[in-house]
Image (cartoon, rainbow, N blue to C red):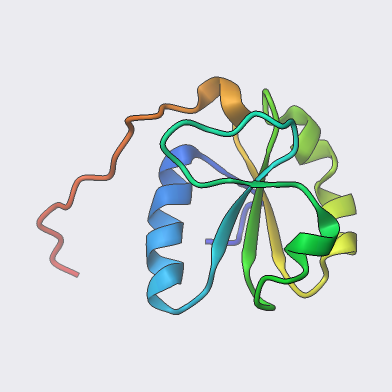
Length: 107
């Protein structure tokens, strides 16, 4: 799950579901003041982000995903007690009605 520092929208939804079963908060962080449709986001504010429980996962996004990916080392240094990830493709690739379908998994 954390092998890569960048998640697609599908990975975000899958990982969010898995992590929240373990009581780990996943927060989608808006760095461009443009909330995503059909998804709860939080505007980037270091003081407010530090109020989330330690161990939470911050998924940063911008318009294309490039800027947040380039700034990821900065975010990681700013929030060492949290996991920091970039959203691949950013807002440009966001599909507001994308959903995960429950399949017949034999896990």
